Image (tube, rainbow, N blue to C red; front, top):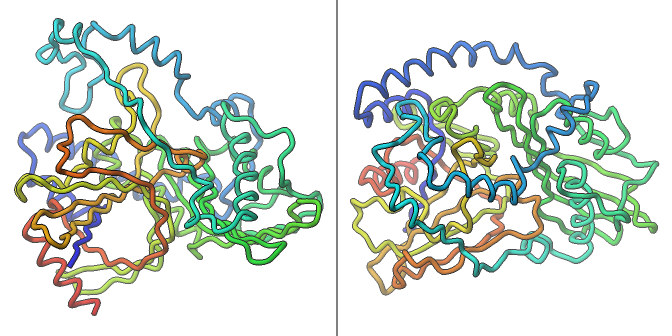
Amino acid sequence: RDTVIFLEPQSVLSRVYSQFSQLKNSFEMIRIAILTTLFLPIALVSPFLISSPPSAVFPTPSATTELFVTAKRKSSFVAEEAARKDAEERGGDVTGAQFFGGAKQKEELFDPVAEKNAKVERITEVSSYVKWEDANAFEDDFSQAIARSLQGQINGLLYAEDTTPEQPEFMYSSVLQWQSPFSQKYATPFQELEDGLSFYRRIDVAITSGKSLSETQVVLRWEISVAWPNFWESRVILTGSSVVTIDGNKEIIKQVDTPDDEDLNASIISQTLPRFWDVYHFGMAPSAELSPLLSGKGGGGLFNRYTVSTMPPRLVYQPELFDLGEREDGSAAFVPNHAFCEYIKTAGPYRQRYVTTSPVEVQIIRPPNTKTPRLKFSLPLSVEMQTNPTLPLPGDDPETRPEAEARAEYIWQAARTVATVPYGGNPQDDQVVELRKKIVRCCY
């Protein structure tokens, strides 16, 4: 059988045990102890520190110009400025690599001759995925046209480098009937979004799929992600759908919102608390945007714990290739090189802002007529990525062997029911085989 492994966040105890078993020096232990000491009290009291708890997903305190402008910045700096500052850094000391356990200047790794002769190779021959042309996500032209129009207006509201179309094809009516569990201080969702920028550090909204219900009604799926205003900037993601009714003037006269998770308060609070890997990577990487798992039901007892959950439909990025190495190489534990389309600066004074996602799904496939397994990775896309109408696909990677038959594509995954177990090792460990057998016995 094919094996699917979810590299998902585990319970704190199992993560701590697994991590400490792999630590190589005492400094790392001290680091974990310090971070745990700092964050554990915050985790216990943070529900009481959250202003405007989550019954209103878009709180409406008075906005200030400074907060509004800051929240609208999609990029940390424009591309031309990034290129100029990147060029200024070349030939200098290797800086910006500081983290717990690392030095600011890595002089022992810096080779001025190699640095001077080094060339950055950028992938120029890339194809792209056009979101609106995916028939699996947008089943008909009517729903696609409405989604495209609304997404353009949303991007114009939330991002400084995007502009709202002067004459949108579809607009909200002045007599809109809006039914929603979200805040409704204003008459339309767009007004609520704009006002929410004064509270959240970031807001991203993507319309991910749609289909027509009649000549005047469509159902649109959406994903909302916000950076919560605490100092580790927790990422909170909500998914759901809206039934939209259009009149003869192409105006939206009715909208009914239905989140996937019925308990919004519990869902939001659980995502604002600091998670183990967010604490461990504090100062090095932003908090991860977790793909939602709905209606989780546990079983298996204390020592054979598993959870059965529903994953709502999502757009994922799927690189795959044949595993030409040995099992001990653990190739399934990291994303292959051919999957990357571009590079970003994640450290240094001119680092770029980015969003991390989790979990990564790894599928180990045994194709017919060959003994070589094929590895397929499914990377959930951040909500911000999905606001773009086109997404890049990688070109040929000179470092990947041709016989690996590497490729990558974007796939719209339908809703699925999955069973997960906590495990702190690698996807190709021998223990994974036994874990899979236990899940099969418990679930079937």
